[in-house]
Length: 290
Image (cartoon, rainbow, N blue to C red; front, side):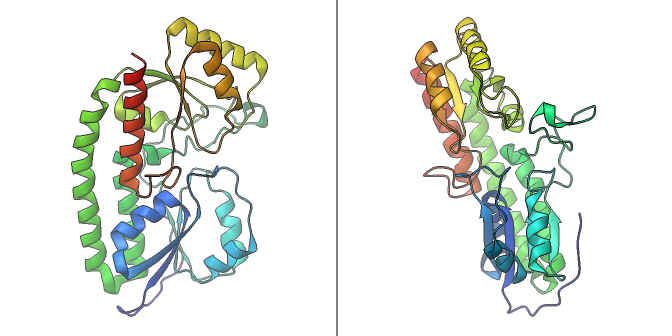
């Protein structure tokens, strides 16, 4: 974990945390409680791959004690914000430390491959087991920045872990009818989620990551759906409905909005609620399209 600087603090002072994403902010608030204030740059209504670096983000980070990064190249823009903030005392926590990374390219990455991440797929937040690794990284960062409140952060982490374990049992039960389900998704956001819950992602509306759908690729996806009898097209909220709706009309498959981060749609205001919503929507869609 990359840590910059040490901040001596009073136990009464509120630790100011900024996170790249709403997922990290949700977990941090759970751990930090009233000992911290948390702001974030992007939530599930926007594409975290593409963030305009604005002056107000730099001002926000200039006043922060801790910055939480997704890492793996997803929030490359975060470093521009941090540098622009001129906050030399801020502590940076890379929340991807310790993650078993999927989809790491074996060869050289170039622009012809689309938006392929050289360090591997960065959407690890969609495996709830990785949520615990994220939480431990965050807790370690909070303790490092604010040792006076170590006991509170340790208790927050324990509470988060207990609730996550309880929810994991619930989610695995809810995912049982989805085991082996084949779906199409818009972007390659879901390898960690599919690993966690046994869902098979068999194709993408994007011909390559970050590349707009083409007519020829859309035709290939339509053929695949018809041949395999696929019933669900998953779409992140910030992508256009145009191509998914064309495919749905041609195949009878159902387009299902699948938020990949906290705040991506109503009812996903916490990390736990995100998985509740995803599994409920997939079960509803699968059940209505036997």
